[in-house]
Length: 259
Image (cartoon, rainbow, N blue to C red; front, side, top):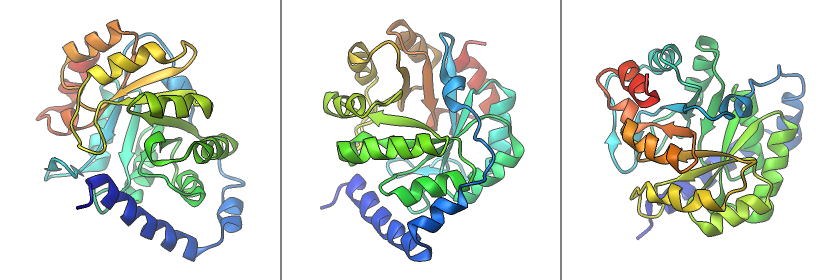
């Protein structure tokens, strides 16, 4: 039986095939040539105070639908008003009920840097990321070969995009560091089992050079969790389900920020 990740990647292959059928890579490239500069996601993440990337996510493969009255523009506005540093937007449709249009609409509404969160496996998706208005892209080390990761990091840089390189273990981390990743996201969720453990961040942070920005992702539920991770040297956090399930997202965000 296929794992959730294997099913996601199989679906993504079909999606990429469709993208490639729409236009050649040279056309994707030319369409990005004269776009306005992206917002500076990396600069927003840099600092020693608590920084939260608040996520707009309708559902997850493991938890199902997180919110029934889903209004991405209203959610993003609440995040901006209550201290988020950046906003992550799920654009995978089949497994997360995301839409690329959500990101485009949110860009018109808020001024924060936007991270496109999806499963990137081909250069055309990186050009597409720039075209739909994202300022940063998620690259998952565990689903890319090292040479792919290095290539995609360079392409993102050429397009003005920041890249958050996600790792889960020492093998992923070695790949990310060798590829020159400047922003490293430690995913506390094992993408094979979807089980989360904050100890993953605490174990890996000591192997990351101090000149890299580190983001802890998944399983962060309380201010106490954040304080524990900050004591370990992590100051940026990507938080989705905790915020999406909150009855008052603004209040929940302020509490996580310690305000």
